[in-house]
Length: 305
Image 1 (cartoon, rainbow, N blue to C red):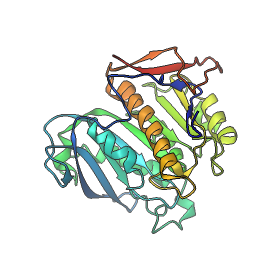
Image 2: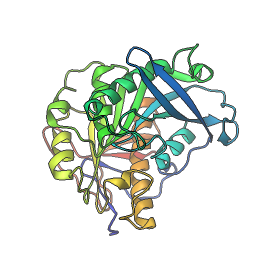
Image 3: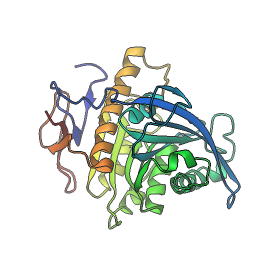
């Protein structure tokens, strides 16, 4: 077993040949553009990178005709909006419109405002979800391509906390991917009884010395109501959920990216799009371990042949 092979506690994709591989690129070319949104009520300026299905690949390429679910991506402390292109670009190729803002006071060039770390980013995400539907706003040329009001969230570290809080604040944010989230059981418990019901995929890394799997990730997951899934990457690291980590070899970093992309894509396809190309089963894959905890059952997102 590879040092970075997946130990998936409650979410597993069997290691078998499949017609549909959610870790691979989708069928669409990907365009990218930068838009600036201003929340005048809070004096927050959000420079935002947007990836979308395009007619041809490239910056400011023409949008491909169609309707796509919105996914908002939240970076961690002192991160930046293009910190997760291993995930944002492939998601767009699968037919999602993906947007990632730089959070003022939390991004790489401006991470000094400690007082806003735990409140500002979540409210930024709620604001952006609405702003992307504004036919007169900075994303007016994209607004008509967004499918429905429901949207997904993916966040890492403090960004993981942001997506949890944003989903609790906005009932339209129903599908959450939390990567090594700095979140606590008390916050997870608040998902119980939420309508519409939220779906959450939590991912952690065994060698994460910043947000420890046993100290943070597992307790947060165990407090979540279903449907909730847990991914543990053996040998993975905290920064391995970003585009770069000097502690991992290029092969190890790629492995962590592939695993994260595989389960995040399958999760959004199932719980945000409602596609049937993946189904829930109760089969373990090689390098996976399943067990029961507080009413959850070990499950698998299996590609449909």
